[in-house]
Image (tube, rainbow, N blue to C red; front, side, top):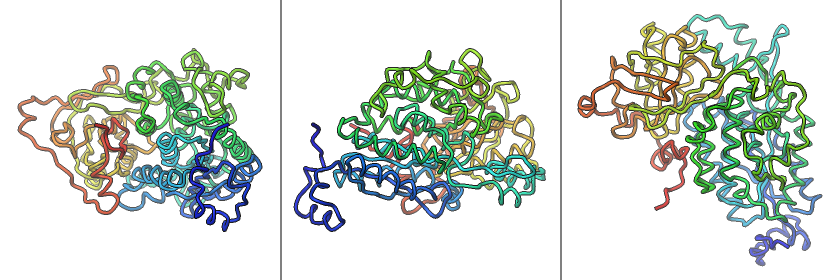
Length: 553
């Protein structure tokens, strides 16, 4: 039988503290399970998790374990994005991972179950699981119920795009106050295949949640049943000594990348997967996998990629159905948190109908839905393509218009200074320069779309994009970023020629090397203090997913 590591720390002082909490002598010998809860009254994404935590704890006790609920930060784009241009959002991911380590590892608990919700909690939980390498299972927190006006669905994407569009005189489909009143009618993450639901689907593809869990309606009976099942399963995993590094193998990451491309998901998943791979120390290069699986087509065009709503995607089988469609292309031998392989989990599963999630040979669009570019302007950069029907340019040569901050760029768009054929360069928005990739790039992209320029210009930035963004030819997360000495994006000047080619996977700056050698970059232009200053000093480049983990010598 597995020896519980919590028993090694059962000293008299620890026992005295736990006895005072109500633990019996018998409880001292049981598996100690952390229930990692990011419940918050600040954001609707997390508002239901206290109730879910209660259910999970009940099941852990019934299965013979002892649950300890611990809390972490709960970053939410629309709430914690209010200050510092959204810099606290991505930076919160690493706080979550470190917070879990401080509480769970320091207490030498035997396993953990993570209630995962908005964008940065799934990667924070995956990173902590890989780092601590104790039995772990994630519970998918679910998506919010969208609203309705005059019988037409309205969600938070409509509110955001309508708000930005109104600045440029673009008529929203409904009055913005009416949409804001109706867009969200329940707890959970943003509806649609934005970053949260992309990451939820990726978690299932990795094998870190129970099958059929992603996506799911927030706080629904199905989600509650999933949570209860996970509460029972985590105790079994402790006794089986089934650990994350047995699950988070290169094969699992191949399955996750294939799933990401098949659903045309958020580009943010790439850096989160890479950060998890770094923590798992498995040697996976997610950027290389994106090209290896570039033949994977779009099997389900969920908003914002297409018109399929997330409810339809869930009802058609969600991530589980996508994995079933991908069986000929993925690694069925990958182990999952069930203790079975992915192939075993899918063996008896049947998809109900092809309408929403199509077979590999009948896709909605050819692949790739996301491409990694490189060239004289970047070591890596990411472009989200979505449905490749010719409505968005994939080849573009234009004249650079360079902006050092979001406000300057937004003002130029509003004043009509951006013209057809321009390549808009928005820099100082990267991991160090932002810092932590604040949300300015997303505003610029929505502004270009509202001004009718998304399809006649190209947009290049070292910042990140909201998972709700899919407009025009947009190249994001350019690395090295402008804050790095000698980074090509920092050397671009107004009037330079920039070339983007999806076909060639290239992003090039058409300037002679001797001319570039005479130029200097902008350096770090945005001030940061406190934690954001510490983040800036510690963060590693995009090829690591922006982790804070020191590089091994």
